[in-house]
Image 1 (cartoon, rainbow, N blue to C red):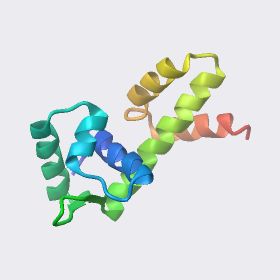
Image 2 (cartoon, rainbow, N blue to C red):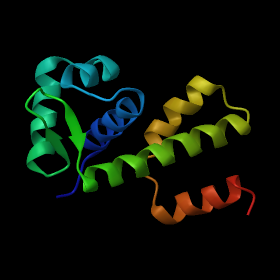
Image 3 (cartoon, helix red, strand yellow):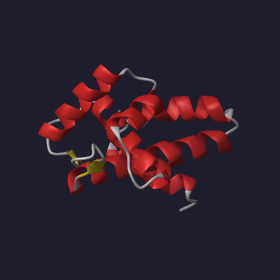
Image 4 (cartoon, helix red, strand yellow):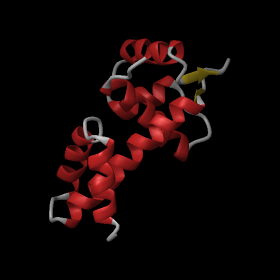
Amino acid sequence: MALQESGEMYLETIYVLSKKSKDVHSIDVGEYMGYSKPSVSRAIGLLKNAGYVLMERDGALTLTEEGRAIAEKIYERHTLITDFLIRLGVAPEIASEDACKIEHDISDESFAAIKKFAEGR
C-alpha cells in the first residue's frame, strides 16, 4: 500500500513521541499534531489495517518494523533538511516548516545528494 503524506506524518509523530515517552496514545498524537480525536482515530485505524501500527489493549501505539522504517526515514529527512536550511541562513521555524513539506516529496537520490553535501563528503 502506498502511504500518503498524512500517513507518513502520523508515523513520524508516533516515532517522535515514542522517543520522549514509553507509551504513546492516540490522544498524544492528536495533541501533538493539533488534530481532532475522530481524525486521529480514523488515521490510526487505517495505519493499523495497513500493518504500520499496533495498538495494545491499553491503547498504547507501537510502530511495526515497516512503520518504524518509514518513520525513521521521514524523521531523518526532516531533521537533516531542517539543519541544512538553518545552516544556509533560513530562520529555524521556517526551515522546519519547509523541511516538513520537502521531506515527503524529495526523491531518494536527491536526498542522498543533499545528505552527502551537508555532511561534507
